[in-house]
View (tube, rainbow, N blue to C red):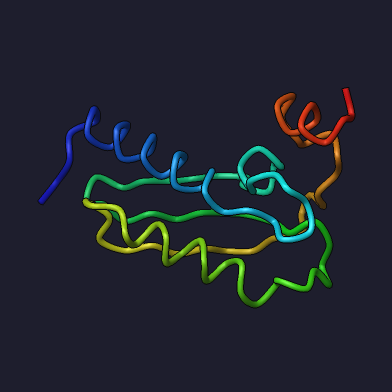
Amino acid sequence: MAFTEEQVQDLGNKIVEKLKTVYDPEIPVDIYELGLIYDVQVSTDGEVHILMTLTTPNCPVAETLPMEVEEKIKSIEGVSKAEVQITFEPSWEKDMMSEEAKFELGML
């Protein structure tokens, strides 16, 4: 079943909301506000590709966090497939955090 542009956008919004429920275990802020999500692509057939990074290459959750993201995205109605790709280009920096995350961490 192919989605309309509006349905793809709605699914994208649901994905962002779901990403905001995944937290970095070392920092009390969700991965979306931390700036760890570089790109979210949603196809018209419900396939989702997420490009994300970690705060450091030797992050203790390097094995589990991408799987947690994938599982949460797969649980969204309308998602037919979810794939998470990790990249370290560009490497994550504190400047990538949202204003909300910086405020939460007392950096503003």
